Image (cartoon, rainbow, N blue to C red; front, side, top):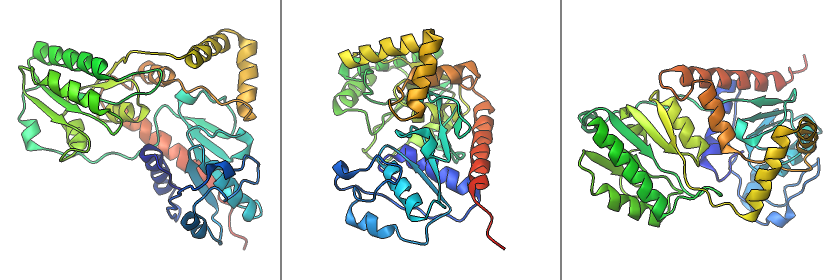
Length: 340
């Protein structure tokens, strides 16, 4: 089941393809989210009419989904199948872990260890085809690629942060006597794009800028051409793309502007991390769906760094392939053999 987040959908499709099972994509669109059901039996009521009409018997052996709003739909399919359909959720499930046959996740969601929880270092992905551009390969080396994200509270990428990022990139390219590639993302605000463009106009080294939504998207070609990558620390997906390129990766730390709610979460996280009893209690609450796990991108980056996956080379690609195969093996094991 596909939702509105491209990153989630890429993981779902990668897992479906790797499973080797026959599969079909079902895009979901929602009408009234107030009708979502948080019960074990789920509900189709929050879907719009075309999405509801697309979900009909025969029910599948396995449903693979991601995101907060897909869970009630997956649960409703299992209920309609008489309990036969098995449920696989990618990312953060937002529901009791026991409601799913398999949860495939990454470290930033802080899910507790469980037999049905697979915590990978990287998102599920298939190798990205090399997108070679002779014009880029003719640029002076080393070619530094900067991947620019956007606001991800408490992280902020406003005009001031974009200018600081651009200046740091220009200084590094000048120091290394190389060239600079810069790619923005769908989440980069117009103000940040404008500030970044203005700063990059002062670069003395060769530069190529790809602004998402304006002309040709050079993101894939930039990844192929890069000798080193700097990525803003707001996006797990962009960080994964960077490490899987094989180039060494550095995270650019965006400024933080925490709200009172973020400060409370940080305090809770510190307590949980330092007190064993609190950690065990918090894990139980998450497992039961009583509280939502705290998304912590620093935890994700720390694991990549600790396992040497940001250092360049093919280690990250080999790790991603192994993790995808492990998840696919677990999915295949969920499918019950047909009755003789």
